Length: 337
Image (cartoon, rainbow, N blue to C red):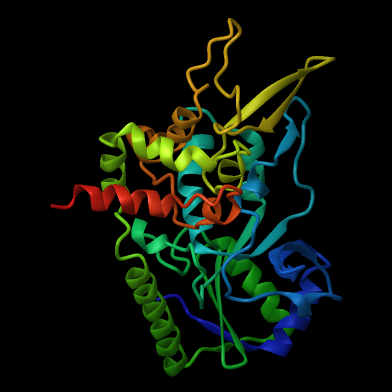
């Protein structure tokens, strides 16, 4: 078993300030009632939020910017550390890696950002209203696609490396603070916290069907439920753009043979309109259903990873107050005898 290191919180903050001199360091802070990533330096390490779900911005935005020029050579000149990543976002890397690294074509821009990012994942110590990661087989603490796992407990920071990159960074931090090793009692307490939160999520979402069952329910669903739930949709696209796994994009031509890759969303009007004017997604309820079909029916046939990780951001962001979970629960209840 990989060692779990421990360091007092005050020493950890000082070490972060020193590390920020050599890396571009991002971590979540609260600003105007919202938690999101901010660039961290020695002056603001005290504002970092620990083990609370979840930053508004999904991890995908660090790997796939909203807009970028893909005809110009680009690379990260300074390695970056991204702290505070919830396990739902780390799990989303499974399908992003499949699409951009392991699907017969390697996206060099995505690859460069992945390779030059050190990912520090947080255990979640609380649950937000729309969190449902465990319903889709994802744990509320990092167990994959992470370089360092971080949790806080009783005034200490606990760290465990999961990769060579993570081990290298911990060695560098250790030169500033000299880690101790977590006691068996502390490790047991951390395990208890993880098991407790897993139970809380399971009980909270007991009526929500699992990922595979959701796909089957959507496949046989009546049109009426899509018309009903789509009635308050304003086609803003927030659900897709804030999703950690949705990565549809446009390629926009510019003078000089430049191409701009720009984030797109299937909920935008004209998303599938073709040159002759035909648009198979013109009807709002059809366009609304399309996103669910993509996540629960089509992507599972093409990829080996889930296309929804249960973060709940689409529900949080919806102007029309549409709950994906309520829709799936209604479909599930309709099939019960």
